[in-house]
Image (cartoon, rainbow, N blue to C red):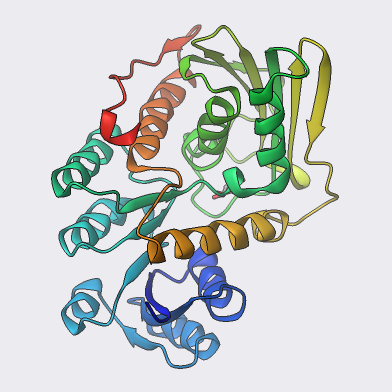
Length: 322
Ligand code: ISE
């Protein structure tokens, strides 16, 4: 196939970052359409992607027949209908997290994809493409330093956007650990608990943070996550306690946000996605992974107000996603 023609839906922080990435960094693909209802944002994105055309809605782009694949970075509540339209059109889709905001809608996408009989959906859990994360997973899997016993994770943001709700500590941020921790450990999450210490007096009314999130995995591994959204800088650090060693990743200096901290991971993620679409062998984080994250997020949000651990109840993984 010649260059993959990618439609980018949504040009907020991540969408515009991906338009630039697909245009300047990724090989084998170009942005053919920018779908963005806001005219100013659309114009700004088009200025970065010569040759792309702007459209206000995905339907118009699908009807024009100028897409080989779609990257979705629209707000989460729009993901279900957007991904479903791409699946109906048979188009491979990389959807930024969350796949959808709740397990029911995520499951509908799992079913739509399975009904079509082939993998089309990938979820943008970019940490799996971070070099240090990948090396840590290999180290744990290979077992040279003994079994994994515990994970300590630190996830700090340098501020909150306007309209920030407390549940977003889980759904917007901890969602990454809800995917990454079981991926690193090779074992699913079975319960989630939230513990609170002294609240930060700088937090807006209604936001009690930082929080400590405790994840129990099926194999007994315990993980704790410090989630802190009023830190001095953006930091994501992980320490894996193995029976015979401790491995720490993420000491990469101070960043303002994820766009620079994970820039290389995003580059690798998008390149791997483009290559896998060209090879018709999509293998990144799946719709099932997006569904699992949505189930865990629901338990995590409940845990914000519950006493003690909230059980995570997952159906068996369909063989389609084996
Ligand atoms: C943001 O939306 C992201 O997805 C980042 O990866 C995460 O670290 C941050 O906490 C979120 O706000």
